[in-house]
Length: 71
Image 1: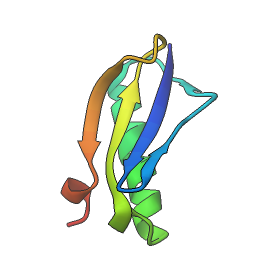
Image 2 (image 1 turned 180 degrees about the vertical axis):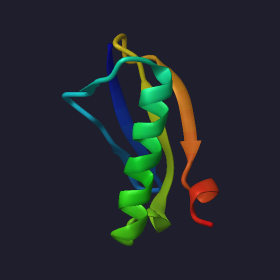
Image 3 (image 1 turned 120 degrees about the vertical axis):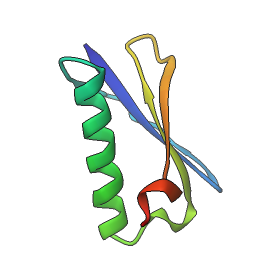
Image 4 (image 1 turned 45 degrees about the vertical axis):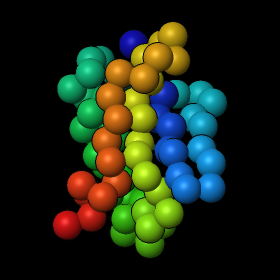
């Protein structure tokens, strides 16, 4: 299944045009947490609000707040 990872920030959103093929929602959730960690390590999340996980139809199925990941 293809999942898309969209960052919502204070100044807009950053879309994922190609998505990633992952076996299930658990794998997509783990991948989303890795994205947040990588962005945190790069110093980016201060302006980011959430990372939305979307399914193949581009429907948001999960939203992860960046603030929850900043501890």
